Structures are given as C-alpha cells and as structure tokens.
Image: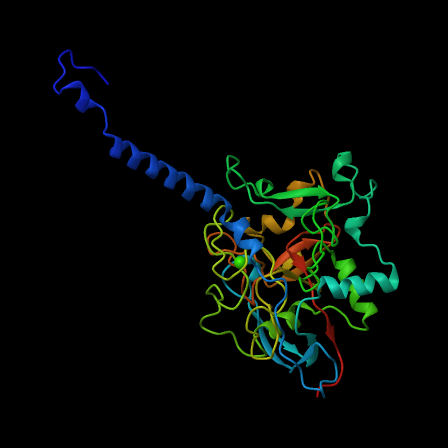
Length: 355
Ligand SMILES: [Ca+2]
C-alpha cells in the first residue's frame, strides 16, 4: 500500500477507535475458537458417546440366544454401483441362524480366555511369506485408521491408514489404546483365520457372501432406496477423510446394537465394521475399480505378492457418499487374509433347523 504524501484525514482518525479494536479482537477470538472447535469437534464428540446400547430382550424360547432366524429364499446377489458388484446373479439360500450383532470385545475375550488363542495381529509377520517387508512392517500389528492432518498426498490412502506395531484386538487404535470399558464394541483388528477360529469354538461358522447379503436385505428383494446412505447405521457424514460431523451419533466405532435392527432383528448389518465372510474373493468374478484399493492395502506392504483374500461385506463407520458408498447390502470388498484392520469385524451363523 502506497502512503499518500498528504494525509487526507487527521491522524487520530486513521487509528481504529477502542470499540472497533475490541470488536476486531472479539471477532478474531471467536474465529480462533470456531477453528479450534471445528478441529477438535470429532474428538470432543467421541468423549460423549455411549459405551453401550441396550439390546431388546429376546423371547425366552429363542433356541439360540443372540441369534435370529434368517429364512431361505432366492437372492439377487450383487449391485450396480461399483464394478466388483457385477454381475447381479440369482443365488438360492437355505435358512440359517445368524448373530443379531457383530461379535463384541467381551465375547472375543471369553474365547481367548478359554482357548489361549493368539490372533494373527499379535504375531510377527512371517519373513518367508513377506521377504520384501522392512523389519518394522514385520512386527506384530494392524492397519489403523488415523484422521489425516493434511492431504498433500492427494488421494493416497496411506495418509489415513497406518500399519501400527502393537495394534491388535486388545489395542484397537494402537499400542496406547485399550478395550477397557468397551466390551460392547465390535472386536476389530482380526483376520479371516481369527474369525473362523472363534466361530468354530462357538460351534458355528462364518456366513457366505450370499448368506450375509440375503440377511442384510432381511430375506427380501433389493429395495428402491438401498443405494441411499442408511439412516439406521454408523457411517460417515461429511467429507471423508477430513470432516466427520457424526450426525449419526458416533465419530468412530459404535457399540453393537445402537441403531434400529432390520426386519429380521439383525443390528448393524450396514456400517460400523466390515464383516468377514467365508468366501474367497475371486478376481475372475470381478473387475476391481480404483475405489477398491483401500481394501487391498497392498501399497502398505510394498512388493507384497498375491495372497488369499476373502470377501468382506457391509461397509464401516468410514463409508461416506464422497468416498466409499459401500454401506449397501450388495457392496463388497476384498481383504487380505494375513492383515488385520481397524474397521473390520465379523459375526457368525449356525446352520441348524429353523424355529
Ligand atoms: Ca458415524
């Protein structure tokens, strides 16, 4: 700004008055407060979230407590939003029993206490299987979602997914976190092998992709509205991965059963955590879209060779309309069998006669 050689106004009028200064200071303070509030809103919100949600009582005559009956029928498997959901095909499904919630930390802890089971994430990565990995990526651990502080790396998911040594089902957000007081939350940081071990211990198995999808649609045909972000589910509201308004009540994971169940009485089939199925993810059935890279995590283990992967279903608390519209029954992704992730859990089924 060039100074005028001749002041056009008396000097005292070039200085803001005290009330104006005070107003400006108040405005700046308000702006700073708003920025602080915005930046920490998600964290503060999380502190006020419930640690448990009340589940409705089941009938005393329910033969398998905690499970509901899913009647058989013919499913239109798949969807048309992402290429990996194609082609939609008819699949016959027999009736089966299914856990009405995702398996919780408390339930998994009971299994570990009874069996001494050690999860994949609690063991060092086999150097023979992953000779390409540097030592820090062979330490026991899991891939954990961490809100990014900047996105200078464009859309690279490595900005919000980190392999954290020490992360496992007991320490879902990394070594410094714990599940104390969080027994009602879905257990995470497991792999296919871990989920299957629990299911077999409980005398059950994991659902196939078709069984899971049929149950998520409440044993009915696809609805006109199933492409919409579900209201009764823990997903992501706002611009992923930087803005999470948590209008659904939860910034991160929710305890099981906090949203209305579907018509069969199944809770959280959509959102909260992805759920492991027993179906291998077959490349020749699908064309992987660029969006699927987040489920592969191959970039987090540079040079990793082809490994068995299983289908996971239902989306998670990280699914947002702008990034991963996989909060749908027909959505699917692939998950490496030897890599635990913080948005992945499971539930079991029982193939037994119906009620
Ligand atoms: Ca949420």
